[in-house]
Image (cartoon, rainbow, N blue to C red):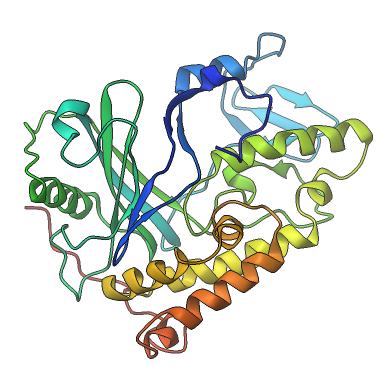
Length: 338
């Protein structure tokens, strides 16, 4: 929650979790509040009543012009490209399958005010020779809890049917049986969208399209909201928004996080658990530097070094830094849907 800008009202927050849980080899309580945003509350907070809206597709987006599908051309001093992410292909991906379960049914795993940010307990039915995944499970503030099995860093991602199978296995391990009619969602997007280059004569990519998708977590909303004021101030002052958004410190952070993404995408389940166990014993500043800080490059460098140094057994560190098994899961043959 501490990443969100001060101007965002309380009404934009649907659910607070004072100290979310992470399961690796052991249980870790993260003494840092987490929240789920309300879609309706966020839309209301970002009201565009005084803006002119063109409800069409943008066919061309340039530095000072946007051409719509009907041929209309809109000119502007500065154009921000917030169209989201391009197609995935074989890029390193975040893949997730989420099932919405009513809170009473979900209570054996996630109680009121609780949340599982990362659950690496061996309950998803995946074998040691299969690509790893973890569970994300949080209450949404509307009487439901989302249980979302998630894969990070695989080239091309993990299929939805495999993620659903793993989610159901986890729920069954805690005695939670579903009807099969529960709503569900699918997520599948690239994690390696880079920041914009300096001096490019083009529209300014912003949000997930402009490098604000965290390569190691898949989160982008808080960072994007927090950087809006920076972008607006640069436009008002006549300076380069790209320079303001992406000083060298922030680019160094992105570069190091990308190395973390590459490491995630080649680890086994046991290696992932060992690595996250090492990470979540690091300092609060170190954890924050990896998970959310936009430009704390010194703390990030230190926590990455320490995480590798404390991952055990020693030989697993070679996989983490890419000296061995660099392409372990490339083109992995997942089983066909049942």
